[in-house]
Length: 248
Image 1 (tube, rainbow, N blue to C red):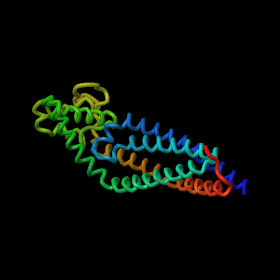
Image 2 (image 1 turned 180 degrees about the vertical axis):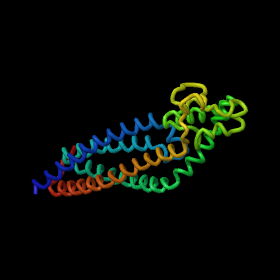
Image 3 (image 1 turned 90 degrees about the vertical axis):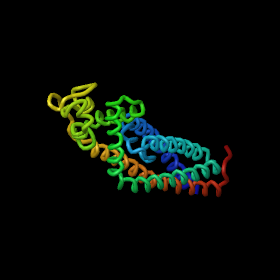
Image 4 (image 1 turned 135 degrees about the vertical axis):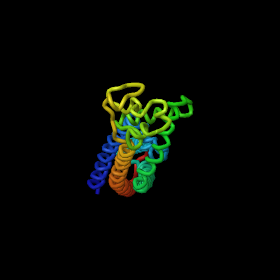
């Protein structure tokens, strides 16, 4: 009987050590994604596109629960293990909801991106022509997207070259510097510079879809792993209850 309890205890400790490591990894991935793709992920202004925040929060919860599980297992404290199991179930439910939202959202990514990018690019042109502060944030977002993803406009350079107001000011061969590889500021010519002619619509949609897929994969994997953690926690609680549990 004691041998089985020790085996379950060891498995739960190992499980939670792995959980701590995974939690740290999630925090790192979330922080990197926020730094690298923050503007891209915010383009649709949807709550789901705050993927880095979701990953960081999830990582913190897993990290804390990992320590809680390890401590409860070592001390064989039944009350602490019950709390750990309940919190694990709550996180499990949250991940299930995130998984469902991710699956639903994936089907509408392209439409959301197209509508949002049309608006942001229009505001970029407005800022370029009028310098009104109300359009400045959108201009910075579009610049960042074009630089990061090596793209230009919504469907290509025509977003600018075919725009009558842009043409009246800059001419039909000028695009923003962020559309070009070898120009750092101002504007560049489609004739004299290396222009990234591919539109941003598909690239942004693919980036969001990839990140949605990341959340789906992580959530699905954690759901399976945490079901195991819940089972181990319940079994160890039962064993401790039979033998008499220790206080902290």
